[in-house]
Image (tube, rainbow, N blue to C red; front, side, top):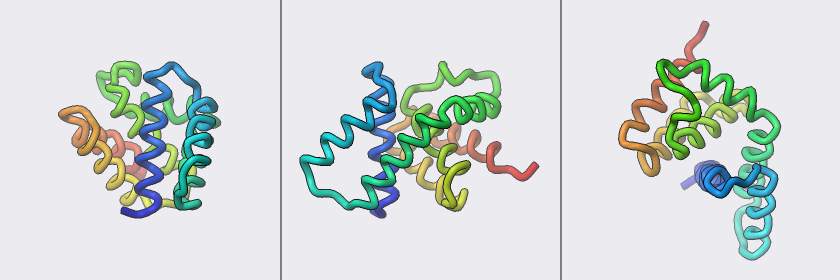
Length: 135
């Protein structure tokens, strides 16, 4: 498993945990840093987790608006928290990194297959597909 794949999973775990515990992203990042201090881990992985969470903290409203705009007959609030977290990470990566869109989509679908709702893979694939189509 690549460092970025591990980082996406860790960011997903933290984003989901924060939402479930009513924490903001700064608190989630602080908890992550505390845990990282207690164990050895690849620096690039930990740095990418920080980038994802800091990026979502800074750009979360715009990312949520973009996701909401791609939803049909559905609202962001109605999504399963796991599916919402996966979409947030993927859209942040699409808009704020140089990661190729096919890699972002593949990684998001992998998380969806492992942790998402029953229809998460097709649903998330559809949302990301609509966000990556050329105008």
